[in-house]
Each structure stands twice: as C-alpha cells, then as structure tokens.
Image (cartoon, rainbow, N blue to C red):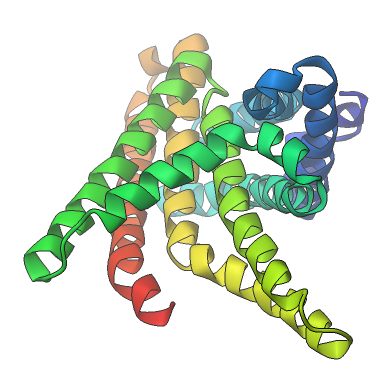
Length: 286
C-alpha cells in the first residue's frame, strides 16, 4: 500500500505503535474487500488481503533483523534488538485483533457469519475437543499435552511458512489474530444480548463488563502463545533471508545459527507457559 512508502523498519521499530494502526486499517479494508469481491469466501479472503497489505513492511523488517546478526556477535544485544521487532509484530497483531473484534460485534448477524465462518468453525472444534475430555488429574495432564503439541504444531508451521515464503508467518499470525478476535467478539455479543433486557446505566455496564470478560478470558493464555509464534516467525524469517543472501557461507554463520536457536528456545518456553495457563489458570479464574 502507498502508506508503507512512508514507513521503514528502523522508523517502525522506534515507533511500533504505528503498526497498531496499520493492522487496524489493513484488516478493516480487507473485510470490506472480502465482502465485496469474495462474499462467499470472505472468511479466508479477509485474512489474505490483510496479509497481502502487510507483506512489504514485514519483509523489510525481517531483512533488517537478519542484518543485525552481521553487525554483532553478542547474543544479548541481538535479543534486545529482536525484541524491537516483537513489539512491531505485537502492535500489528493487536491492531488486527481490535479491527476484527469491532467488525464481529458491529456487523449484522448474517454478514458476520460470512466474514468469520472459518474462525467460528475452528473455535467450535477446539471447544468440542476440550469439553469431550473427562475430569481428573490424568485427564487434565492429557489436555495439557494435547494443547501444548497442538500449539507446537502451529509454531512449526510458523517457522516453515517463514522459511519457505519468508513472510509466510504473517499468515499464521493474522489467522490466529482473527480466531482470537472471534472468541472475544463472541463473548461480547453474548454479554450484550444478556444486558439488552436492562436499560440505562445497567445496560452500559453490561456492555463494558462483557468486553472485559471477553478479552481477559482469552488473553491470559493467548498472550504467551502468540509471543511464541512471534519469536518462531522471526527465527524462520532470519533463516530465509540468510539463505537468500547466502550468509550461511560467511563467518557470521555461527552467529546466525546461535541466534535462531535461542529464538526457537524462547518460543518453546512461551508455548509451555501458554499451555499451563490455558489448562490450570484460565479455568480457575473463569
């Protein structure tokens, strides 16, 4: 998009909040393009258009991150620098989530079902898997491992997509953003429906209470899981850029491999935290 000509990685990493508005804008435009051009396939089309708009800037950001590995051998410095990219991806992710939540809540029922059909189906499948589990410590442990390995599978796909397509991880991240937004939006719509019977301040209180519940219900375990995908995406992107630019045949190859390995280990750590939160913490609170 033309807006990206005004942005570049170094500037965005100094002001990551700009990517929040980019995510919000890109997804909003994508929703209306999807409904206009691919109405019956709007669910995937909206994700595709969002990713398509973000590709140039995300690609340049990954190139910028890979170039940092050639300038320093200090892993501590590199991790600090990569955290800047994490903030950029996080801001973009949150912008997409907010946009998708708003349209999930504001669009008429039939239109909303069209735009979020696949996300609704995905959440339904996840809920059926969890609800079908029996109770008890052994069953809870089974759910824990199931959730962990399911998220690990997503992480592996994120790395592979980033390696093969360089910015392919953006598709995984955007898809997950819309799934989380659908879950949050569903909680909000349910809360609004329950609050509709009341009037005045009680109705307003019901609306905001639904929003808080919907966000926190999925943010507790969703945040570490998404961070895992961010680190994995950056690791895969660095590998892809390094292969394209033939940097693995240079003296910096060991730095690149060490950097990627540490990013993947951090990603794995967040996956463990996310699975534990989802099985033990979130159910205890909600």
